[in-house]
Image (cartoon, helix red, strand yellow):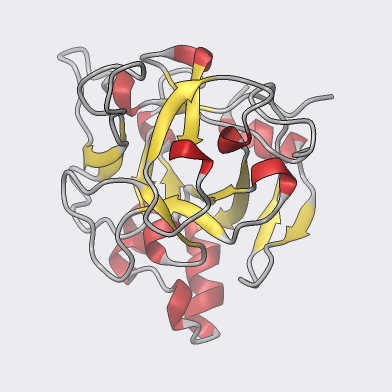
Length: 229
């Protein structure tokens, strides 16, 4: 099932607390606690669904590291909700015309990725809204190697575009909302190492990389389970 099909299948509108953003198509998955009914999680093609997004030590604090950790239905550090915000173009148009500067993405980003879906990945341990999303350093244009952390939701730095053009099956790259290099965008990336390494490798953003076949590196391809029936 493609990402766009998943979004349509899970269509339901919720309010993102404190941000004023519409969240469409929340998904459920096995890597969540029972208290977090709307949670889903993301994993890479490289490691598969056994290692998913995790807030280091479960801390709901600004700047906390985002890593991959062994999937569990009893670990609240893995409770994430995906907010589908419509296309990049519709998101840009709405917030641009409403002069909501906290949420503005650049005209160049809109022009480059306007047809892609915009998302935020929000941390909700045990179903409690932390008002924190995964992202890069707030207020700065991301550079290669910037680490992924928990930051206040509702910023360009916590927004990602689902890169359907470079998808591989059900896996797609996720382009950071502050990207400015549209020929080689910065995408969510798992760095060198393994999820079991100590210290745990932080996720980061790196330029989109492809093999000689044109397929994106498996450390930059992400998937989330389909909506439960």
